[in-house]
Length: 367
Image (cartoon, rainbow, N blue to C red; front, side):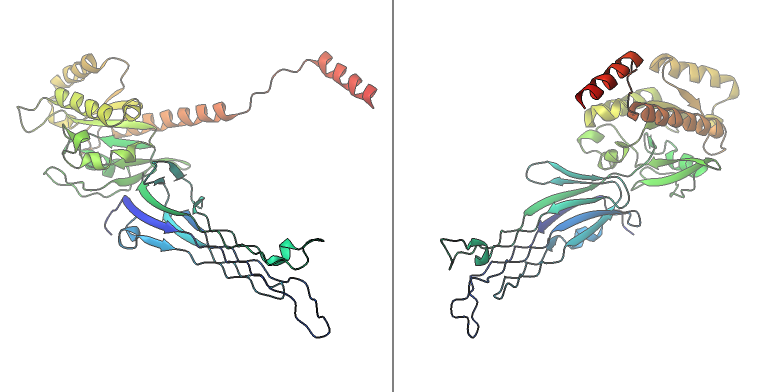
């Protein structure tokens, strides 16, 4: 199936049914009162996150969604029937924004999460609502309200704990296939990866994390060069970025360190918040570097990027160093999750026992 992560749709909720002005007409009841019923509610349109859907391709071909109108009211106190709602199923991780205002309407990051896209109009009131002691034969009734109408942008952002970035042919696809269950296409030419790949990395019986691979970045990606800029948004939900660097490029004129700095610059140009995420350096293809030169290569990157940046020398092809990297990632993610749990726990202030007794006495006196 073709991977589609953007779509534009139009949604229009149903109009509410009209209220009706009607009067009771029965034998032996010459002056029956008003009995006009209300109109039914127009159908609303919702978006629902479904983990069984992976792309937005369905919304590339069907772009307009119209809910039905509510039925009009009738006499004999008959209310109009409300129209059914429409549910649009989208992948988990879909962000929905208003095309005209840019307002984020929903960020569906949980399976089954539901968001209202367009609200159906209310039904009009029949004349039975307008009767009073001074107006026993009201002829007023109100029309149904129109439903909401919107143009929406749908944007899929994959849900992953770890994101891979780097130049084309840096070995990202080989790495994700070595440590996870993902099976991306691997070849010796640039831009082999054309869309994001997700893989689940099993660290233990009950411990795992999700890793995402996007097409390789090149200099100028934030301005539209290459393919990577189209998928950088998928890294926005990750907790950790792995910057994969080819330490033994085939082209001797290529400077890996300069290329790595260019990638960091592209991240800042695209989204400073993305560039500020924790980022580790993964020095790939170390098996192609002579053993007596490896320490110097690692030291060179440490001098360039600082001691505070974690550096992991690996070989995705031979899986050398991959276990160490996976364990370090798992530990870091567990620490981040623990910090989130602690931050979300309610803070309970210490309560002085004398103050508690004083409050009890005061309560008893009031009684």
